Image 1 (cartoon, one colour):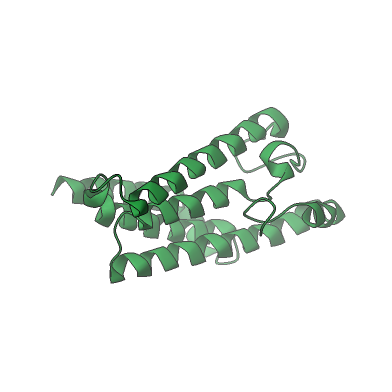
Image 2: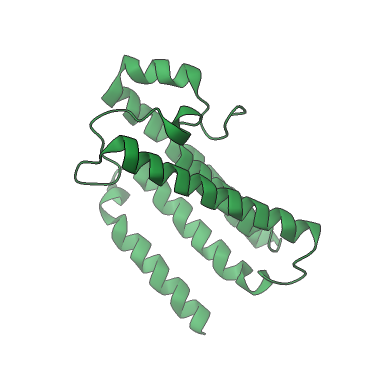
Length: 174
């Protein structure tokens, strides 16, 4: 019962945080909302499996994804703080950040959410958790493509050059 209350509290918090974005399906934040809601539900249904058979290959892989997710988000936040000098909001910058983790991958925060989704998904697999994983991954990847479009509009040719030397989600791979 308490788990349902906590999930509802977080889900309402995400809804409140993204409330203005829900009317614009062209904004990347619209898809981040749906990805976050799917991820929250995935966490809530897999939470009871979090520490079951912790030394199994699946659990070790899960924890590896979770650790990589944390490294990715911390690297992105560090780069934003050091190189970005945000204006007003976390996602509003006066210039394109191309150093730090952003020198390897264009969307490290989405990468982190994708890794988090994979890590949570590996905790326990069921038909429902696979559907939630697919929904979350699809939402975060779509958010990345929407943000690409927004960045092209904001940074024009500079962003085109940046795309040629970095990968979208996974350094050196994709």
